[in-house]
Each structure stands twice: as C-alpha cells, then as structure tokens.
Image (cartoon, rainbow, N blue to C red; front, side, top):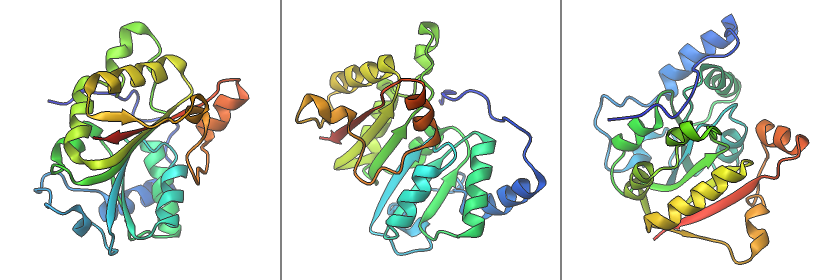
Length: 224
C-alpha cells in the first residue's frame, strides 16, 4: 500500500519541446517497476558506477544534476512526480546526457518498496512539501513507515540527508528519526545543522526561502 505524499502533478502547461523531451527522456531514463529489481542496482546504469544514491522530489533538478555531473562514478536515481519538474530535468539531459542517471515519475514509496534491501548508499530528501497545516502532517514524507522503508534499503553506515526551511518540519524529522532508532543524527555542535552540505549547489527553492527570511536547516543521519 502506498500513500500520496505529494500535491498537484502539474503546473503550467508543458510546451511542445518539453513534452517531446519528456517522452523521449522517460523512455530512456525511467525505471520500470513492473520488472523485478536487480539485486545489484549498479546494473541499472549505462555507466560503470560504484555506488547508488536516491533523491526524492528533485524539483527542477538543480541539485540532482549537479551531483550526477560531479560524481560520474556514482549512480543517481531521482524521483519527481511533478510533471513540470521532470520535463525540466529531461530537457537538461537531452542537451547533455548522463549515463549515471535513472528517474521515476510517480510515488517514491512505490520505488522504495521495489528496491532490494541494503541497496542504497544514500538518500536525499531536500525541501519536501512541509504540509504546514496540522491536519495534513500525516502527509509529510518523514514518518515511521517511510523511515522503515529508508532503513530497509539503506546500507549500514550510509546517510539520509534532509533539508528544509520550515522549523516545524525540521523538529518533526529530528523527533521521528530519534524515535525510530535506526538513524543517528550527525551534529558535532549546535551550528552544524545550519551549515549546507559540502559542495552544495543551492536550489531555487532555497534561494526563495532565504529571500523571505527563513533559515534553512541541513540534517544528516547515519543508518546504524
């Protein structure tokens, strides 16, 4: 059973050029979950990779593209159900193809349940929908059931990284990860959680948050 942790699927109409890139790009990069997942995820990629990372909700793809380009020996799986975000990503890889990239354009929980145990070297959940109204908090992606999913697919010692500019969601994530028990927060001092990740390229959403006076937090948890 899966749950809808995302909101709308479409924004502005997709232009013909974007639609063409989306169709051809998904044909090349989209994972087929109707087939059984391979025990070793590295075979999913055209490039020879030594590790596999997952980014859930990559938005416009700024961070995912940056990471995939700077680390060609790592395979990256990006999930984004929002059609406009995926179209933007497919436009980018049509111009500059990436042999170490695969994508999925639906509910991330479906992908997580498809993956084999202990198959990922890292998960990034960056600026997810905060569902700010209390009645919607059950739709936040960080939850006991999804942390169970993360714990199953992450290799011991690998990292779950979470970034948000919404204080209530940051606190929510800290409390849920602490209660879960499979994740150890990596913070040596109080200021650590306001330091962006090494090599962080920034995102449009982050820039908007800073302009509006919200201070981002960057949390890192190690799978124990």
